[in-house]
Image 1 (cartoon, rainbow, N blue to C red):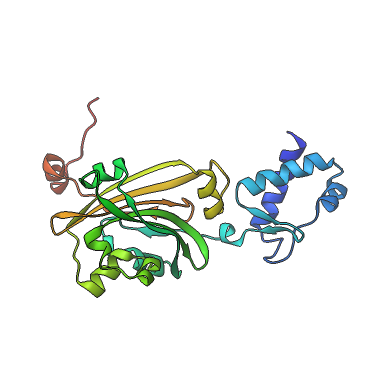
Image 2: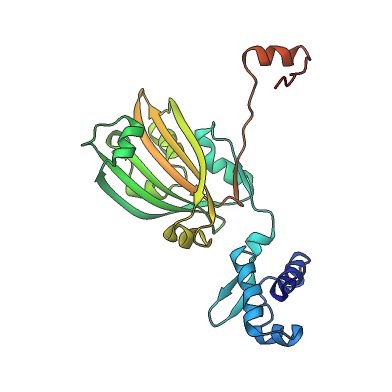
Length: 256
C-alpha cells in the first residue's frame, strides 16, 4: 500500500473520530513529516486527497482545518412537486436560506431557453444569476430567466428572495399552473466550483424547472446543487395494471 494512502487512511480515521476539533489547525506538514518519517511530497499528496474530498480545507497563512459542514450530516430533502415549498424544505432541515444576486440584467432570450419556454426568439427575459446558501454554507447556484409579465411584478429587493415563486404568489397573487422538471448530474465548471466551494470537475446535481402560469410560460430555472447537501425525494405511485395487482396483494413476476 503506498505511503501516502496509509497516511490518508489514518488521517481520515482520526477526522471521523473527532480528534481534530473545529477551529483548531491540523498538524503542519513539518509535524506530519516528523510523525510519519516520510517526505514532504508524500504528506502533501495525502492531504491533497483529503482536500479534494472536501474533508479538510486550507487557509493561506493560517493552516489546514476540518471542514465541519462536511463532517456532519448536511442534506436537505426536496419534493420537486411542491414548487412553493423550497424555502420551507430548507428551514425544515434546520437551516436558514438566503440568496445573493450575482447578475441581474435584461437579455435576448437564449435559443435553448426560448425553446424550453415556447417563447419567440426575439423576446427579452430578465436573467438573474444567484448564489444560494443554507445557514451561510453554499448550497446552490442558479440561472433564472423570467418573462416580462412576471418580471414586471418584481422589485429589485425581490431578486434576493430565496424562493421568488413563493414571493410572487404571496405578495402579488400569482399562481403556477404546472412545471416541467428535469433532474440530471454533471461536472462542475470552474466558476461553479469556486462559488459552491467544490473542486473543479466535481459532480453537481442539476435541476431545471420550466414554469407556466395562467396557461403561459413564466420562467425557466436552472440550478446546480452540492449533491452531498441536497437531495430530491418524492413518492411514486404505480398506475394501470401494475397498481391493480399491487392493490390485490399480488406480486409482480419478472418473466425476462
